[in-house]
Image 1 (cartoon, rainbow over the protein chains, first blue to last red):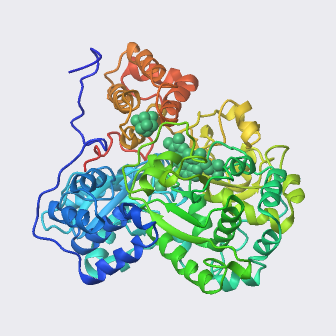
Image 2: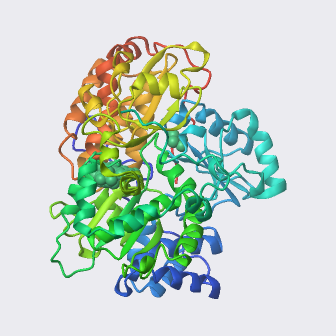
Image 3: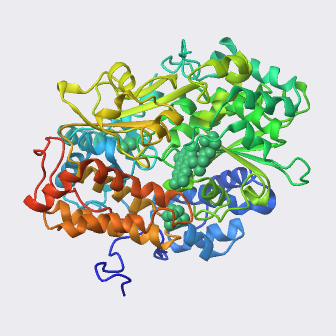
Length: 200
Length: 437
Ligand SMILES: Cc1cc2nc3c(=O)[nH]c(=O)nc-3n(C[C@H](O)[C@H](O)[C@H](O)COP(=O)(O)O)c2cc1C
Ligand code: SF4
Ligand code: FES
């Protein structure tokens, strides 16, 4: 269907307005610590508005098992007290929730103008070449996923790479990619520079 | 008067500049004491007198906004600090929250008390996990010291502050979408009216302000509304942070007042363009505003000055492009951003952004026709002013602006099948790949 002859309707790419369903996955329940953390967070909102804590709850799931599954979202719905459909609806909208399995390290490269003006395309291309993946893909060993992100809010340190939604690596260059992959394998996230403002 | 010295960011480079101890040593939380000695109405009056305008994009007068909260409403009231900071090129709130968090808390307490709110939520973008950790650690200290929480400084005023982290959505920066996201839903905007000041978070009166706006509030009480109003040009008062990125020698956040010009910001503050290359284009307020050419360099970088120059101050994110920049590629890069971030609620924005991206990619591949250029303008015409939220107007700005100033480059692409400017070393010819999820 198309509402204009020059526009093929329906994008083959993911769009955030779509609702993507995750696999069911293994049975899931929060660990007692995570459950306690969730209750603490939920106390920030009026009791009848517990559903406000759905985003933090989904982050806790990802801390516990790297990505979201159907069972995990059903569990979140149960502890929050909303429908499973609501949790799935929310989860499929935000890019930082992974509804498919990801590697141990998710390398999230900013692709927006300020980073692109400083060579972000080369950084992504080099990462993909060395890991043998396409953007969005995970390498054969399940170790690295490469993702393109939109402006991360640190454009003065372009190009910026974020790892696992939390750790930052700044002023990246294609020449430094080989060392970055090696250091991540050897030292883990300690290999990253962090955000410039936190360095003391 | 030009701002004599930084007041929002004087200590950002000091290793412990963000701690409560350091903040107290440098006169922190004195403004709160002064504000608590006034009545809420007097506080709002002072903010009005200072001339403070919102730093989130639209430049709406802050004191006036606070005045919209219905005083007789029996419902609880809320303050939401917009720390979504997703406008491409913007990174000032990042610096303020990480390196001067107590200034934000102090501003939150003053604001909450004057609108009658007992709770403030700081909505940070999902990517700022490291910022959340700093904020929460410092909040804990402020709570223990009695600057946040119950019965603040013995005044009987209660104000709690909580940090709420989003999960990667530009649209969550739009105020009503932010409220939806905070309520645990998709970040999709609401129809207005009613405006959030009357029906906002959980259906209660809510004020939404940008981080930098709230950080300016303690400054007003510290130095006086008269001093604040004397800084910068008339109606564009107070200290202002500028984020400068792209092709400049010293990208970063710079604090000055709004009597500064784009030329001063780019050449004096940010050290000009590396390699002595010539300036080609500058986006003065984040990707959602019109691009300007070097002729506009002497424009005053203020809310009103940039409107006069044919653009907007927006989030004061100045992105500099030198002569090696291919404008068709730049337009494609930005429309990709909007296509990816459109919340999908209304058709012109969701479909139009994708369509414009497809047309631009076709031109970039060397397969475009002259009709495609007009088609771009036609699509833009069907988006602008026809969407639920201002995102629609934002997404056409890069395309329309670049076509207005650089149409020759688009036509060259169509005629010759390649760019007018030689391929710059920093840019791969083909986009490295489409976003996959
Ligand atoms: C699509 C869109 C994105 C926005 N993103 C932000 C943002 O990231 N940060 C922000 O402070 N304001 C953003 N705004 C502006 C807010 O809607 C709102 O006007 C602002 O937070 C009000 O604060 P102020 O009065 O202090 O400027 C955005 C607006 C739109 C339409
Ligand atoms: S204009 Fe775009 S972002 Fe705004 S409501 Fe419509 S689809 Fe969503
Ligand atoms: S453009 Fe990459 S961080 Fe802003």
